[in-house]
Image (cartoon, rainbow over all chains, first blue to last red; front, side):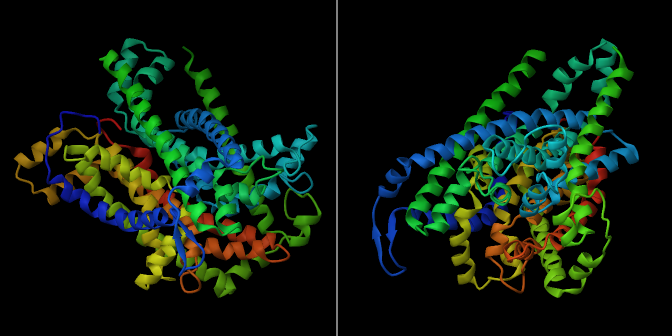
Length: 296
Length: 271
């Protein structure tokens, strides 16, 4: 997308049109409905009052929301800091061909295929000290582990669960990216006597830029919207240690059934994700191109 | 340089990760062959009282197995539509500049940034108006919101790796666009199509909130059927574990078929 040598051709819009129609149908219409709700007080389906930005002001001042937002930011940063390097390392370690490659690919992908509520349920049992393998093992090693009672344990369990669940996404993307680097590059590096690290830094990493961008953005936005797994595993507790934004939103929207504030909350939520993704996207585009220009 | 030492370190790391990845799944498989009593009362590494009952329940109860069929139908519809509409669009983004291209490209991804909970009520109203409620199409169309942008992004990445000279040579040789696209270009980005199709399948397969809201009986997906055991007074862990094991199977088959596309890559360009 950053190649300026591409020819200008307005007819290309025709190729994009089907996508535009699909997404517009299922995104713009619902989003407009939400905007509509966010500026009204819906007392009943027949009685609505226009309230302007009142809900927005109310949501912005919400102390609990600030707490949830900070916890969310911390969690998403931790997710990226662990999953991205681990995913790259895993992709580099996976065999390139043969039956081993197939077997490893399938095993690595398994955790992605489990429905999210089941992921939470498995870990709920898996982490229990009496009947779960992880909990029992940790206790046997002498840790005082209790994810339902201890805030740190709960937070770490949700993080490890997310790492287990989603690192394969990063790994698979990077793996496909690595496989498409032509052998000629490696041969050239061998002739130059480049070290393994140099090969990674100057050949593999720049070539992975495209897939890494997708991986970082996906992991960031998905972890920012994490709901089902912590909901099933810890229910947001103990206290509010694992109550992330999405959970707080659902408590508002479903628990109190207040459509106006919930819609305003949703829009603010969306704008936060949008802003952070935009910053990440632009930053990664710049980081990716600078060493490339220097190298060539 | 010590290639063997390096190799061994990587293999050790890989094995360690695979163990980490497989253990929770092993625990689920283990549970699926136990009785509820054994699951909750004792810690056992393998079933002491081995039983197929949990699987039998699922295969004989239509409310269970129809869930799998419903899920497969809407996931298949969704994957086919997503990849089909994304292919030409990704080609346009990777090959041409046009009015608003960069904005549209980023805007596509913003549709993934909305928490699904936000869309529940609007979708419900929209599909009720269209008379699509409780059909496979409703879920398949709703899931386009997050799958189409993803497919476009992944495919664009792979297509940008194919040098433009290939397109130009083909046009000079007198290929029409559709013929060039299907016979020359598509085989070159097989890996990308495989990855995109797998991710579309995966995200649609595991999504719960929208699928549950848009269906009630006729198109009820397996993920929603599974929440039934969670909300019941006594939780049926064993059947839930068996159902969980079965939800992995279709995806494992899909990845088995696309594994070559992912592993082989292609002979040129960058991603």
